Image (cartoon, rainbow, N blue to C red; front, top):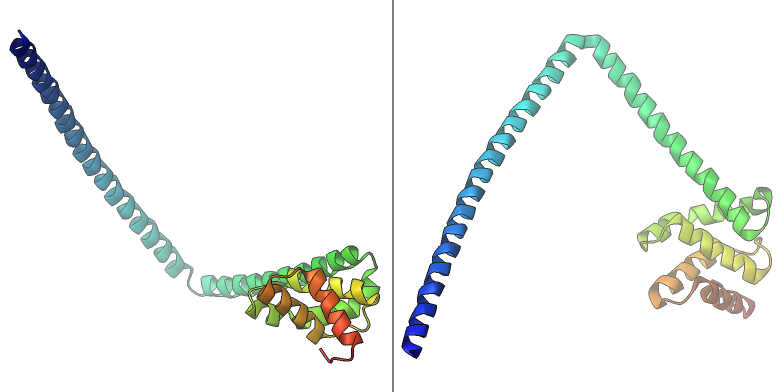
Length: 185
């Protein structure tokens, strides 16, 4: 009796595996059909983009001198926009800087200029103008006034922060103590 049960189980498992194999074959066939359709769509899109490109090239040729002049004007306009964006960014940064220090823009103008001078040094360290402003703001709080802060002090705070992972406030306090002790930073 046990041999008959085992034989029936083997036969039913064999039938199930046959059905599974049929399903896998069907899936593989479906996938290859879909891959073919996707390949055809990609070729059609490539052809469409080439046609669009050719059409734009032909239009530019037809525009001739007018197109060249408009291109120059657009280039100049784009450059001016870039300059204005930079100036607006600096303006917003200066306003944010004064607000963070709790003073007016006029009171922080000199410190902001010193801070922007060290921006390139901060960029070389992988830091931004915002990091430089944070460092100079911490120094201003430690010294109690911004007139005594130099670009070297701001760089030192940034370097201490980046190299040793200490907070900007702690680095500013250290820099203030070293300056008070007579070290030229």
